[in-house]
Length: 449
Image (cartoon, rainbow, N blue to C red; front, side):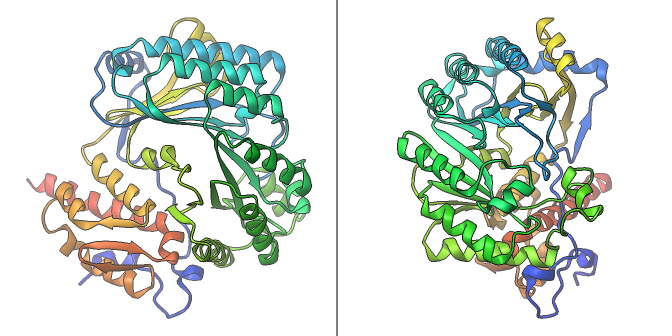
């Protein structure tokens, strides 16, 4: 019993599951189960989506800003250096794109509950550019009264004028990518501000007390010892932010950091067995301080922090996308906007949505969304899973769930799967396994019928 699941089994040798439950961390693939449309069919399909009224349900909006002050070594998302002329032109184009889409039937009525300005680095833009984009979002899109409007940023070039411009325009949440407070670790990764400068910036932002403040920390960086990591946690918490995110370093091949490590210019980053201990330290740190864990990687100190965008995107909420390189979804359709700035500019000026790809999801997408959102929140209701996948799913998956429980990844009681700290660290592996198994089972049943 359970032999068919054996390749998804965790290591059950009695050692610490945070270190070696699996040999590698899986990735949850966003376009899983989706069929890409041929290029010639993209624009007609897009017009069809825009002309269809939106169904009831919470929605999101994402605005991508593909500029950065510099290329941080660990980052795989860098595209363009910010220059004033390019930023002003880009803001005009994004505003035009938002206003044009806002007139479509698909964007009417159903409210948008969270807006996220991401990148790149949105705060590379000028104060006026940021203000104009946020003001356009508020004026043109059907935002919920309590809509969460997040501006993602970093310390360099994010001055008082830009902060106040964002606040006056309507931003109510800032997510600041600190990564580490240790000056040596920061500067090794291309972060220019020192520990003291980072603290002063965050204190000034916090003391305005007009928006939720979230600090992003990264663990597993070269030179970031356990002592440095504990100091990072203590420094971040002492600042009194509304929330803190903890992310493990993903050493992406081809990034400057991966290249430098391979060439022996940097010390090696901690291995997979070591970074589990970093996560455990962080989880224990917040548990002892009674912070509320919103998701596997996010903790809230105050009720002002909701983390709506990240939670709703995992649930499969529609996400309206704007800007070069942005990705979004409407109903069964997922789409990506062309990342090349020249292509983006020419398309917007010609009155076209510059979509680079559009894919349609199969009928199993609601099931994938339920699994992803449940494990992301650390708790999966198997009765809800059966309501979508069919009766008998819990019994079918019982051998795998029991094995994961024996390995220390979860507790299973009264039909509810609750992830342990180790399970939360390895959550992507659990999601990928459920996706694989349920897809195989349900698609086989369809073929047999």
